[in-house]
Image (tube, rainbow, N blue to C red; front, side):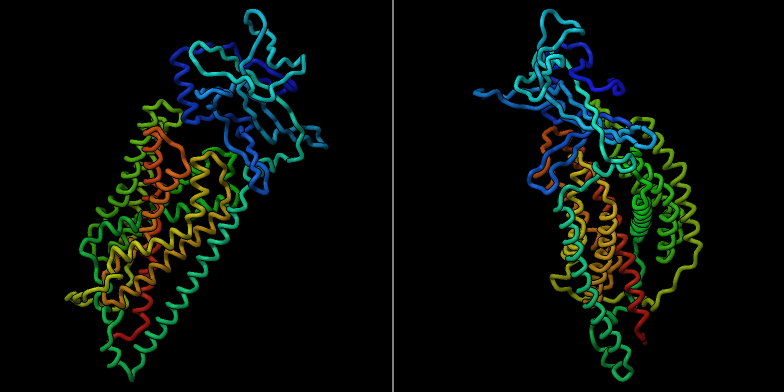
Length: 547
């Protein structure tokens, strides 16, 4: 395609092809599966303009164009497959008035299915009567579409139109990244207001209740009365009792710290404009590198917490931190990638890239985790604000609503509610080939998620301690981490209501990748809830006078 030679009209891309049974079947399968053709011009992706009359903005962009479409002839009941064999490219450029230099600022396409006709025998110099530029007849519709059948002749053609645009080269991505759906803005603001309102109510209740409790317990003249009451003060001798099997909790807390650091730094880079969409694969590359280097904090957090639990084998806990989560994710990813290899798809990660990931894991991440574990284990542990009794206190029978399973499942609803609207747009951008680059909103949602996870975990932990149940370590992690269950269920709902995936392999890929995402979300939210609860318990028990 010569884009420097002016406009083209019905240029023949290459010689005609004649379909056989095998190629016709392959084309039909790709049309049924809604395959798209993607191109790049001057680092801009090829897009199709979609008119939307139900929105204030009249159009949105989607990546690439479909290989073909299915339809019926008038009066016929049989559905046919048609291929898009004529493309009308629109290349937009901006001309600098000072330097008289033009740069490309847009790359659009309008695909058609046309059964081309010509006179006489075929040769590449034949004039196509279906879109003869000399006769000023160009393709404007698909009244006579090109069928995909055995022994059908297909001629691929294209038009190129150059249009001058007022969009400057520095702003050429703005149109692609324009959020064309006002519902998105309204939903984000609505979610923000609801979560802030609920968080404010929770904070007020907690502050007033705790202030009343602490004031009552600290009054010297009512010490005897306070000691006779039930409540969170009565379990002060057991609330910091180390877990008998704390290794797994330490591993997941360390991994959560690693995830939190990776996401936070990635969002900061994105907000500062370093992760431009023109840098293809830049976001994923940065996240992988940050994950590797954040292994230092993962080892430190897990080993330091392990030492607080009176652990002595810091190398064992560090080894688990370095391998447990990455090994599970890598195993799932390898199976999914093998399925893509089996389908002979170009979307499969090459073996060389997989080997490079393993090298990063073993060569950089693992040593950094061990370095962080060594430093974390050597660091002095902060003393507990109260002493732990030698004999564990018996936990009284709990009310039905304080059942661990029930309270954990209830605790995950609010964090999920803070992100599910944004989650819809993220899933749409990933699985429906839309652009997503509003990291400002995403960062706000991330902050809301942190606050929500912390507050809901603190509230439920307080109720648990008031019920004289001091086994809060794992429950604090699972309370906010259970939001990952709702995320996966919502992903399943999205699959059956928004996507039209029929091939089993595609379905397995979707649920496999969403399982990885949900697992990572569990580790992240669980760690946030754990540290919030850890800070809360130390704060309240250091604020009262314990006899």
